[in-house]
Image (cartoon, rainbow, N blue to C red; front, side):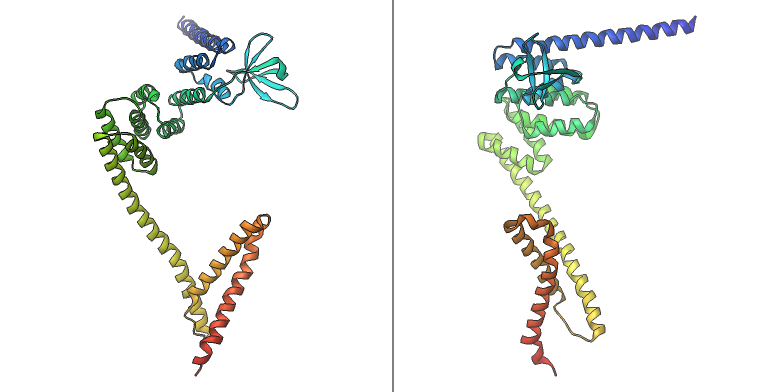
Length: 335
């Protein structure tokens, strides 16, 4: 009896899940069908927001198609499809499942138009949907996009995402994106000052770009805080840039040093005195660089062969300079 009861409960669960899934899909299709009756861009925007409010990842497909101008209405039955232009017709796909749904001529379809305002609405909607993705990398990308393109409308979905986020590193990025959105909203100055402190701690060039925009448009304490944060970030970046340049200098200098030591040993065995090993290497390297730049600008079709052309010229230039030094200076020192 217990086995039959377990089987019955399992079947009941599966039937309940399937029925709720079917109902959810039917609701989504009903919303998508409204595109066929939208009279203008504002009504289309309302439908976009209605789809976004469902929170269902399946709506990413029709929204992305709408943003790209690939969402169509079939005149025969007013059904909405994702379309892909072919050689002589448009291939149709189901807006939710992506399954092929036949084809139609362009005359039988009406493209759903979008303007810049609607594109921004769709972009924000897609960002909101990706905040709920199970993949942390997708959530990170969404947070980064929202940070770089802040919008006051993002605050509410970001609040919800932050509340449910379990990965500390992702949560920190979401909080920074929320701070960026606060800075372009009409939130109180106290909230904006806290956001500036949070973004200032981020400390990268994207933070400087955002804070520079805030500094230009704000006043009072917010402007002063943005100015101070920019100065602090620039100071830190200058320090790391200097360290990076020193590291690069040591790395490149070590190459010349190793070449000089190797050539010194070789020439020492040969009984030849030469104190210009590094300089000769530098001349060859610079010749290679110049040849590649000339080919890039004047003969771009030969650029794949630029290294083959530059190498013999590098040896030739180094040899000619060495010959000039020998004839002009060294020969008078023979004793």
